[in-house]
Image (cartoon, rainbow, N blue to C red; front, top):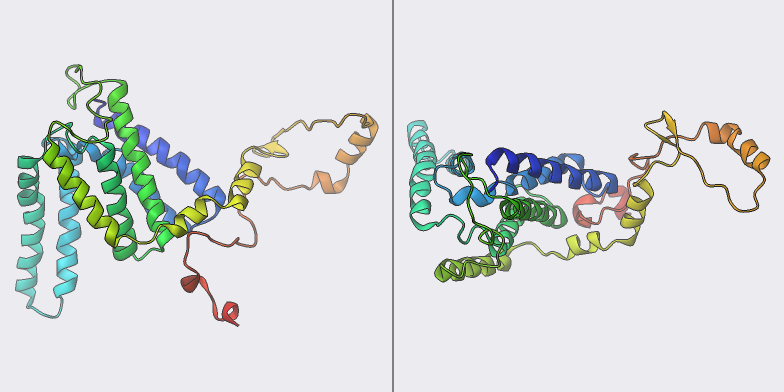
Length: 294
């Protein structure tokens, strides 16, 4: 398998490329794009959570410990004394970081169910739920975060199949075919359990219609196509040659290019429209202003 540095580097590049497309499409707020991009980077290292001594596993359970400890702290604020809150906060932090970590690795098998497309779907749905019900994002943004994580997750699996280097960079492994698979047939109970958990998460996940409508928006894809390449110049320095129509007089073309309007044409590559387009990823109810409702 590829090492941690390779996974995080390639995952960052892939997530950055997706973030660039999302930014150009101008369909979600920029502050939400940061969280969505981080979900893609997280997905690029998440499959190695089943490797006990790996940095992704330690970092993941440390992050989960911090998240749940503060969730318990905030939910219990005002109910208990300061010392009791300290005990709950520290107990939750240590319990998740070390207790849950130990229990998880008693069950998990490296290159097992977590290196599969079933785990990809499970983690994507779980991410959408976190974005929706914990971060309070709209349905479309929640599933966009799940989609980013899924692409990062699959990037990890593909890298592990391309070449095999152990996590400590000490030896090669003949492990082709063990990372990118539908499910773990060798440990079928794990696969059945994860499939059941995925079905349960789908039952409480936010609706995906908003996300699907956003991806299938014709106007969004037309806009991305128009912004794909510069129209006038690269970075405002190198002019882009314009094709001359058949039968057009060279003098007329030169005169047209010399007009003040053409000379003052702004660089439109990557620019954000002055008037924000309809956002297919955000709920109408949360975006309406009092003026819109009249």
